[in-house]
Every structure is written in C-alpha cells, then in structure tokens.
Image (cartoon, rainbow, N blue to C red):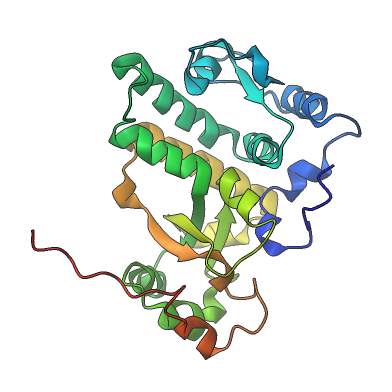
Length: 264
C-alpha cells in the first residue's frame, strides 16, 4: 500500500497509528472499517463513508457532498490516502472544517472565488501543521521568533524546547503527500495551539485527542482566517532532518527573512 511512503520519517508520526490500524486489502474498504469502528460522522451526524470519486454527482461541490451525505469521495492516490488517514486521526477537526466549508457554499455558492473563510479552511485542510506550545514566557518567545522569521533563534538556539515544550503535528494531507519526496523548501502553514503543562503529561493518544477537541472547538467558535497561520519550513523542525547545524538555518532561499510591512 503506497510503498513510496517512508513510515520511519518523524513527520508521519501523526497519522502512523491510523495507518497501522488498517486491515489488508483495498484501502477504501479498510478506511470504512476504521470509520465504522471509530464511529466517525459528519457534522449532521451521518456515518462517514469513503466512496469512489465517481460517486460525487456532477456539478456538486466536494465539501457540500460530504456535508449532505457523510460520503467522502476518494481516489486511489496518495493525496486522498493521506486525507483518509487524517479523517481517522483528527475527525473532529475535519468535521469542523467541512461544516465551515459546506455552510459557506450553501450561503454563497461555489463561485470563482472561495472567499476568506473557505480559503483559510482549504489551506488548513491541505497544508496545515499544528504547533502545540507550552503556555508561558518561553513558549511565547518561541512563537514570537517564528512569526518574526528569526529562524536560527527559534529552531537552533531553542531546539531543546521541541519534544519537551512544543510539538509539531502535521494535519494537511497535501503537505504529507509532498513530504513523500522531502525537500528542504517544503513549508507548512502553522497554527499555534497553546497548551497547559497537563498536555505534555498525556500519552500520545491522549495528546492527539486533546488537540482534536481543542482545535475543532476553536474553529467552530471563532471561524478561520489566513492571518492565523505562520509559515514553517518543515524540515527545520529540530531532529527532523540531518545536519541541522547553524548554517542549515542561515540558508536564505528556504529560511527567508520576513517581508517588511507595506505602507500602502
């Protein structure tokens, strides 16, 4: 099943439990077995099912179809394979994103432009990563460095914080697909998720469940905006790539300085 995926890579830790739980055979059938076992539903409470792409009616938006039926059109490719694994890993976040997109489509139609809320939801769905950071001055300083593109300060000088005071969990299925062939320039749209110390005492399954609940609740309550993301070259995460010396983070073609604010 997609032998090009290297499951030893740390960036796949997020969805590896879902992959490990799949039964042998066609992956859509395995996805549906997991969906039933996990009790996955769409925002309307309908059971979630993975169906072939040609089940999507002509002219109907993908997100609206999921919202109306609970059926997720799925092709036999890496992109949709990772999408299914994310549904099984963060079902509440996926449900919240779909509810937001379906509501926007119902209100404004599909149109040539998605609008700001759907744009943010699409970016989140395709390319987001969730940076969970321990509440406190040190965590805020790390986030400030990332937002200011002080890459060496955040990722080299503060590298000991990763795994102890912060963790990056991938979410976007297009991001995971790109990382099958890793390149230094691959960049995630990061959403920062503050967490109390109790979070870091949970086991991995408990931390994943906490993230799913906290982020989905925030999306439902606050909506989404592209202003909420900050970029992060994924292979800069300490321990995720060899030879991360100081010079690694001084490469301006990847770790770019922040653009000055426009006065216009």
